[in-house]
Length: 378
Image (cartoon, rainbow, N blue to C red; front, side, top):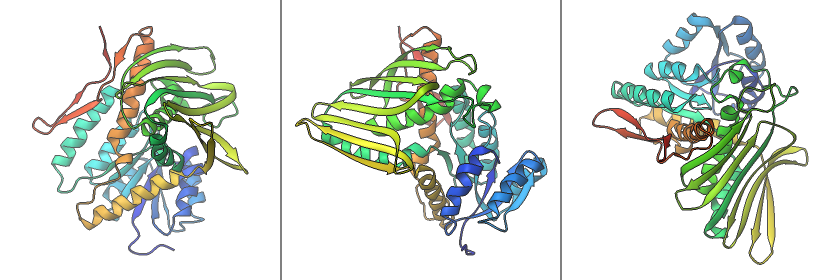
């Protein structure tokens, strides 16, 4: 049951992910938030999502088109907006909402490329300079909120200094996957590699706790039913001196996804799977004495990221100088894209070594974002 104190949000988008993830997960925390409006470009699409939402949020409004978007922008009772649209349009839409003072939770990927990120960050900082309070720009990267990765980050110290890191992704993007025919993903820069891969990169960065300095990758296009590229194999070097490999196959006959870190005192692995009918992650810790222990964590990252955003916008309303959850920050999402973009850039250059460094720096003095990613090494 919601109350007058419950923050109200709007959802832009009425596609598969809204219907199968956002609305079910929001229903689990309906005591924390109220969905006031759902918007889509067409009336038919908006109504299809509203029909589902009204089972939990009976008063949700159905709005569509330019007029519907303007209604959300002008509605002072709507504190936050979840932007769940085609990747090519999300940044522009998010900036319009931020300019209107709305807090934004934008679905990943943060942007289509590092150049778009550079322009977006510059625009965002200009917007913040002209508003009395800074609107939150969050990116919905649920992997950073999965309990399995939170726990792995704690366990990492037990394996000692890192010696090797592996990220192996054998995806299942075939005709039976509901996203297979998604037009925006097929026309997206980097195709499914970028759209799916940012999740895997987020998991990598969360797990190792440091940034990647350089990459060297090879890309290929084998399955012609998929947009190019559909395979990538990359070597990478971490700030701590450890090297690793990132291998991603968009469509495999035997899907498998895992992250594995080998240390001087043991090995830590997190692998996607299912247990007792629940999908999630199995964490395995192997110690130097031959002992091992495993724990299974069901998926809950989408719920947790939504709870974090709702908490942030509720606290921001109080004007208490609340600092938003750093795992959701646009910069974190931008760094995921920047790293994968560097790998794709290297692949397009036949495996050239590309420096990633610290992807973005912002100068308060000049109000400009400096891009320091994608530099080919001589």
